[in-house]
Image 1 (cartoon, rainbow, N blue to C red):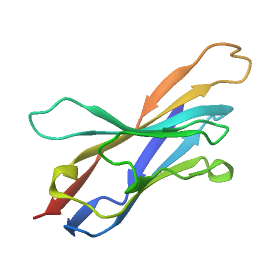
Image 2: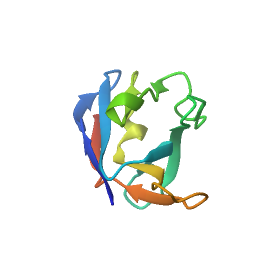
Image 3: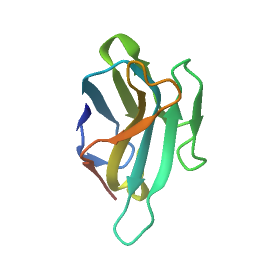
Length: 122
């Protein structure tokens, strides 16, 4: 089993910055892709960014140029650095990670963090 614990959410003014963290723990063998998603009230959950085990990244158009998704493989942690925040960034942010257990071969399990609230005041 793998657990993901998120931290770093909070209140920030428009134009400010926040850094979210998502740390994996437990019986970790190989974490593949790690992702950040968000869900605003009344809206569908959307993919914000992801990073592969090799460091390849992708970003939603809405956050491109403002957010980055660094990863520290030694700490089994992914971050979401959010700059130039806008009110439309207000949402609950979730991380997830794809994990292959020892001896799992092609088996991949997806684990989710608990979510952290980000609120950007206008």
